[in-house]
Image 1 (cartoon, rainbow, N blue to C red):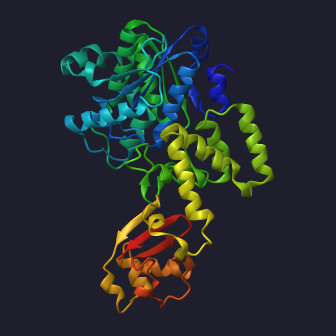
Image 2 (spheres, helix red, strand yellow):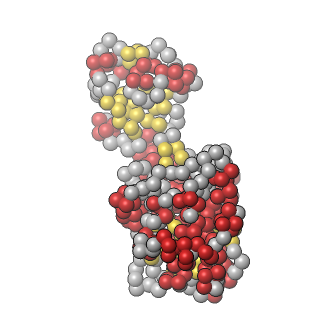
Image 3 (cartoon, rainbow, N blue to C red):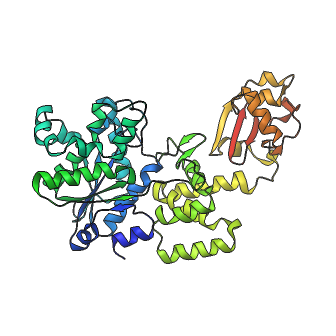
Length: 424
């Protein structure tokens, strides 16, 4: 399969400009995707464009990652209902350094290779441009009517908050990025999420109008969960690619706990396993879905891709300790086991409060495991809380010193996946 056929089979093509596939078959092509430097780390929403870059390089083409140092200062209206906070130059610089270090893990930047990956920052070419120069050399080539026709702009104009001129100009800036890369680095392809179609085609149009060139665009679908929930969001927030923000164990658990429908879709998108291997895995999963073969394979492949095999093995070991031996008495866990359980949130609590005893509902609320007594009571009534691996069925239970493991610890489980170690 050629690159486009491969991406189509994997469900990674949403829209594509005519001639794109022919261009990729004709010659080694430089293609870029943009990354928004709003944080020091990328999150799993960025995994799709990263994986697209890897596919581009594997197919013999030249991948380019553009860091939006300039556009990150003004914000993109796409998919937003309100204008976001603008970042200062120092914060942007810090974020760009973090993102660059992450991208270097996934792509080959070996300058000896003809299709070595390249990273660029659009602040480098926007910094010397004056406002007058930009209006004269770029703005006059794209009409307001054309810009207003983009869905991302129309939604904001029709909404309650409107859109500032700053964000309205974003598509011109992104369009100029493509024009600059086309002129200076022979870049003929741009790709990204389907919500960026309007901004990307503006770039191709600017290239056509300003220099008579031909450039191409394709987009991939935005990731959604089968149940309608937001992809990459959990109770604790975003799933980050940084091990400091999301531990490899938590990262592994996210993929391990996806639904059957999502696993079947995502194993094509987020892994590099072959069509034959994936089809066999799906067939085997359908014969015994309880074994969760798809989820285990997906979690393994993505965790190794992002964090490496050693961290994957540690995540599996932690999972086995927490879940596979869940029926073993908590008393059998050593101090070392309790202190070094990755994926368990540690909470400190005053031991003197246990001298006369504290009711379980107050204990759960005061430790912060639940945000309120009402939330704790509801979960207890539904049988969703275990203390020292014993389900709590008595709402009047007193938490006293005699339940402490090694005279110091209480192991609390909330729901199926959330563990807390209360240290007294």
